[in-house]
Image 1 (spheres, rainbow, N blue to C red):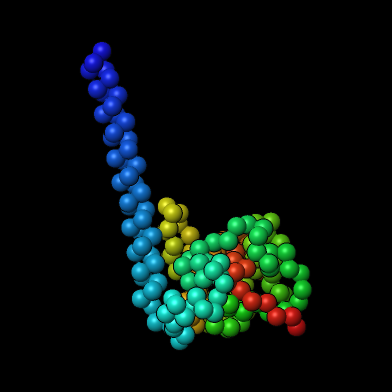
Image 2: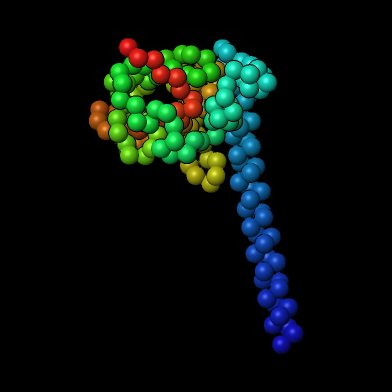
Length: 170
């Protein structure tokens, strides 16, 4: 009976060690991706303190630290006005309302960027998922992700965070 209890304790301990090891691996990969992104050179660069002075806490977390706002919580997911969406950090034009569509995801979605010059893509394997991150090529701001399940003519869905965008009518 004692041996059986001992084996149960060993099994629990091994599970905990395995779980901890998995968490460490995921954290290491996330850290590597963020480090790789921070090593890129951008036309607009600022320190974290400078970004914090010009952005709200949510904008800083999403745009500068690759966070994600909750679905259906951003100010542009249900915006139907005509105009242009700009980078919240540096102000370059990123998306037009002409390519915005209802994706049902709770984030503003577009089937194409306004100008690919300012919208970059890179692999994102954070949180154990394989995705394609979308970022501003002018300042490095995290914008969201792009997926291959969008409408014609591109078949793409640029799923953006409202916190990374500013909208201007017109």
